[in-house]
Image (cartoon, rainbow, N blue to C red; front, side):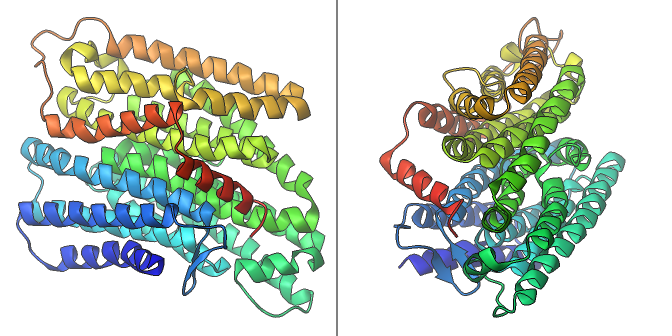
Length: 486
């Protein structure tokens, strides 16, 4: 039964995380437990994603997994499984290099699964307050992972991440209460589920709903990394362990944007789609412009990837703001960006462990020193730059074609910014991937198993860019429908 898949999706990471916290298992045992649990979660997520959503949502208590939620749950589970597999080799090499305690590595896997659990709950939350609680919980669980290495820069990044997002989400909570107040003001039944609020949407106070949405854009937009609310993101992504950075960029930012989309569907009925469109288009273009300028001048490769995430969240926000074909492209772009960015962050983990530096100019001859990692890193940078044959090219084309029909001048600004970002990325690619490696630098991969999850991400990205199975297209079609019909 499909409901059992939901229970497996939720209880597997929760139970495994508590067990890993409490049981002093040897390394091989907790590594096996963590990866097997990741496989179970992936199986459950795929079962939910490719179930029949034509009849509506799949309910399990206060959780409701419609096609839109299932789309993002699928992304989270794929990245989670591959990042867990990569973490086994990554932590072993980190422990050998820096003497990390065994108990700390076990806590890493416990926190990792707890982080996955909070994102699974947030994706399926069928209650406006539960959604806020789950998104805030993602901050608390991932903050410990950002600070996993207990270095001065990591501690600072974790505090910055937690304080900025918590304050922003408190503003978002104020917006949630305004939403609830609007329902009460209309003298409707007090209900906090999406379906009930959607039915009440035409009767809600327009001004109150507009004010509420502004606060929620500040709250969830900060969590999604939209500029100029993105200040936490480069520090957190650059200081976290590379598998955690992959989840932060490829999964968590999507969840924050999903939360915003849930409220957008209500606002569009109450106040008209022009209001939310204007706000999201503005944030989308600003994100692209700001990120592109910072990409051009960036000196650290993990921070470069973080600013690239700001750029792509801006592109995705534009697609959802415009609706129609652009919204379909935005959903696909979220998938492509997540796969590409996870591939890049996992590759950066191998690069960091070999070169022991984060400065771009100190990484030379990557394709010679780490041939497989270097190839996938190069391919990932081409993908986030929107180069064919990767699907990001077509999705960006669809989004900006739609934007041009409505805001031609903004389109020109955004495309110029994308050109700047492309130049910046290509500049960094040539400096890092090509040329001669440093004298005495060891050649070849440290662990071939660490390359396997990166290769899987590359194959998924390339395959889904060129061919989209009918089951995926069906899910995409239903998820697009959920953007306007809760």
